[in-house]
Image 1 (spheres, rainbow, N blue to C red):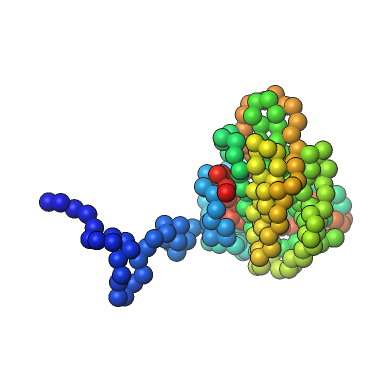
Image 2 (cartoon, rainbow, N blue to C red):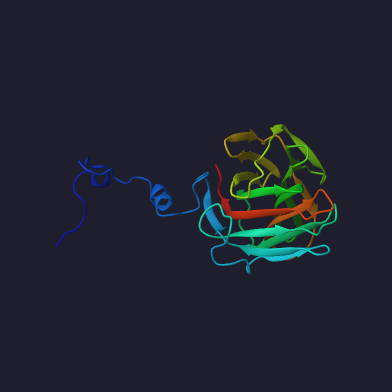
Length: 242
């Protein structure tokens, strides 16, 4: 027996429901964490619902990286970062993804708390076997501003990047930036409802012979002789960003 759909298929008019024309919308309604900015093709994501063991933690002094069940952007868990209680100390997590085809790649993450923060750095670095590429966005909490790492490895202010976040651990902000790894240029930065055009800005590319790889990393640094605490959730890597 022949099978198929009637004329107009999924676009046919209906009386009681709306036809489905966007599978991304279906995924969002079923609980996908990819709802903030749906551009690009997802190649990896982590909502921390299955633990934190897939991340490599490290730091200086007495630090901790914990699976957190009290605060999260979605679901029931996030990753809690706690630094040593000495000003300037930091804690890091990083995840090896595997080397992709060089293209416009996006990194999205949500974060909260900002207790004793000095900096939160969000790193996307690639090694292609000959060069290392570092695209990094940093939030300078005491000065309430967003910064990017330039082609020399120095941090520069993003024009118009004044930004203040709530200090409540229940309130998560979401940030996404896109970097074009064939031109070593940033493309754009989104922070909640704010959008910044970074297409004129270059990031770091240095000779470095190693195994091809891609790594996403977060570094939290304390601003006082007290522990900085932050929560990370819903980390998403995309490629083929328009």
